[in-house]
Image 1: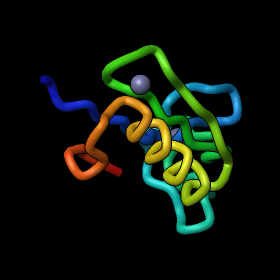
Image 2: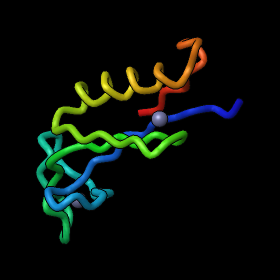
Image 3: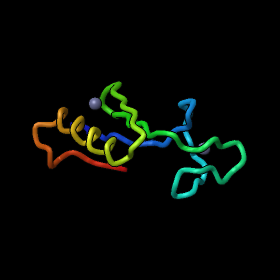
Image 4: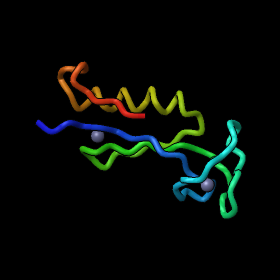
Length: 80
Ligand SMILES: [Zn+2]
Ligand SMILES: [Zn+2]
């Protein structure tokens, strides 16, 4: 059985991925960056995605989703 992972990536207000450096409060530090407004979690095993402006809340939802795939929660791989 393949490992299932769900990754969390920061996104701009328009939904595009933010790979820029930002301050601890999410303010942009590089040209072309509009700042991080939310985080998006995507699952490697299905088309599930979830968006939340609070990363800790999204991590909780992500972990709950991963458990829904697996009979044994301990085998789930969590990557932030
Ligand atoms: Zn950015
Ligand atoms: Zn899934």
